[in-house]
Length: 386
Image 1 (cartoon, rainbow, N blue to C red):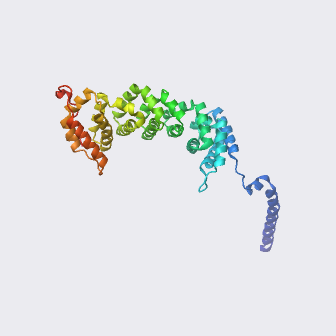
Image 2 (tube, rainbow, N blue to C red):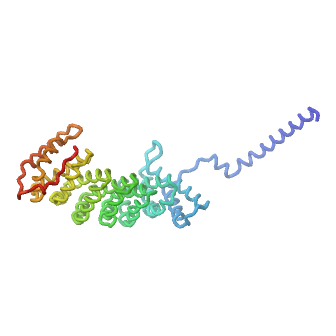
């Protein structure tokens, strides 16, 4: 083909393509999808986000647990909704959350029973959505004013949700999410009282010793929150459940084979006994020779942290002005070993309060007079590592 003819054909082809493109552009721009592409999407209101979240959760709760495309699409939409809930409550980037929007969200969230649906459906959500859901529930328990009252009233009317959250520790994949929600719900005294009175309390002694370190630590943190936050509620619980509680506390926690369990337990025991609200419980605990035997064994630990925390509990036995005779006699039988131990027992950093307490304890032990003659069979205190 002659070169001139070929050039003319190429020019005609380019001209035709150009004309086709010019005709096509207006049609595309007139289409709805392209119009939406250049429009900024209007943010949904808190009420709209909660409504959409609730609707999707209802679908996920009722749908078969399969991997159908529709279900996956709904889960992705739910991811977006829960992320929006979190953004409203926590703010985005540097912007602070709007109090009015948070209040609207809280009111709608509890009115629609969205919290129940979120807890029930939690294991079915995608991983990031589970994390966001935990933060949403947590935040709603920390709201102030009217929102706080709404949360408390809702939980009081739906205390059975705590059964789901506590037993969530049985699910290794979601235990931290359920535990995170539970710790925040315990901020409400009515919730803490319900959990303390329930049969679930006994489960914590097992949860704290689970082989999964993260889950066990989270359960220990929740247990501590239960036993320290609401003073009057805890004092009432301990008074009514003293025998089984401290029997399990001593045998399962203080005498556990796990170092971290013993460490957390002896520290918590000190926090409980030294709280003024529990003064009656403290006197009862330090009047037991069996309890003192457990603490004396903890003083023999090779771990200094446990030794120091055990000392702060042991000193209560010695300082008790109404020591039972068996405790006096055991202390007298072990006097020389105890004094020798405390003489070399020091903390890593200078601590005047610790030194003063130690000096007082040594003075008390040195001046004790046995109520009955004691032989070597009364010795409990074996040589220790200091």
